[in-house]
Amino acid sequence: MKALVYKDYGGPEVMSLTDIPEPPTGQREVKVRVHAAGLNPLDFKVRNGLLRRVLKYKMPLVAGFDLSGEVIEVGLRARHFDIGDRVFAYAGPSRPGTCKEIVCIDRADVAPMPKSLGFDQAAGVPLAALTAWQALHDTIKLKSGQEILIHAGAGGVGTFAIQFARHLGARVTTTASVAKHALLKDLGAAECIDYKTRDFATLGKKFDAVFDTLGGKALIDSFNVVKPGGKVLSIVSLPDDATAKRMNLGLVARLFIRYTLRPVKAAAKAAQAEYRWLSVAPSEAHLRQIGDLIDQGHVKVILDSVYPLDEFSKAYAKLESGHATGKIVLRLREDAAPPQK
Ligand SMILES: NC(=O)c1ccc[n+]([C@@H]2O[C@H](COP(=O)([O-])OP(=O)(O)OC[C@H]3O[C@@H](n4cnc5c(N)ncnc54)[C@H](OP(=O)(O)O)[C@@H]3O)[C@@H](O)[C@H]2O)c1
Image (cartoon, protein in one colour):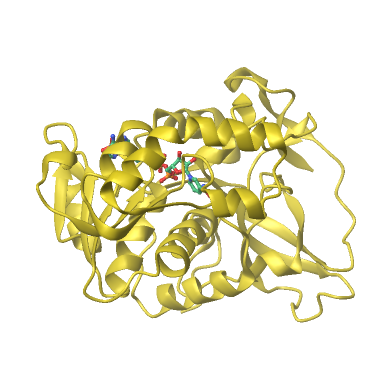
């Protein structure tokens, strides 16, 4: 079967379409015929070796973490799925490889696709939407009436985050270039800041929470706009103390994190705010919740572009530009069947 493979760590030149054998289905797994695979910045960060300190992969490696498709076989202990079920999944950091025609995936990481979506849109949901949900709902615990600043609202994560925050009853301010403001207001942002002409740190306004999807200066400056007792949650920096402890990291990693995070901790202390960090986890239960919100019409999936698998180079170039609006998806099969509803 056809797969998008990185032959080694490196730039776009290490990617090619390769024939690989079909995997056997494990007892806890469902075998899925993949229709579409959503791309995320994680894909090129893994390929470039940027995350090698924390995520070590044996090369060659099949690309991709997100998928949508149809179940074609179920393992003995995954019998709650039926052949023909339409599913979507985030495979998790330890099991990449969704950019191939057939994928076996753990039953705990896969959920029925939202009925209102086709395969292309469904493939754009899992990693980005799980991140936004786990950040706002589970970690920040955003409440109705609170104010949140969401950085990079037009990104894959940001487009979901704005809609989840609105659904939870919060008032959303977001940063994006001006051409994207109309879309983000349509998704529920009350206020959009053109980051190219206006510095959010000088807004003179304080938020209950800031969702940082940029890191660096944006993360440090976020503490200038958070209320005392508020939270700044980053998905791009390094683990906070409690998370680092839970991750059971070695001494060297913990010392590196402690040293690197000194300016962040100093900014948090000065603002009397809490610094949190999140690494998204696969979750069938969360995918079901997100699917319900989509089917109930509370959340839209914004696709930047869909490329046939053969055009993976163009898809990665767009992804690596850092300027996609919503999600980029690779299509492995023609999306012949329309949404079920
Ligand atoms: N820790 C985790 O578990 C986790 C999970 C998911 C993602 N992430 C990380 O989170 C980051 C965001 O992911 P993503 O999927 O949302 O990325 P993405 O879709 O590639 O983000 C692209 C968007 O970022 C906007 N942007 C770029 N620079 C900006 C700036 N300075 N201010 C405001 N907006 C800006 C762009 O808007 P313009 O075109 O207007 O510039 C574009 O719409 C990535 O680094 C990713 O690796 C981490």
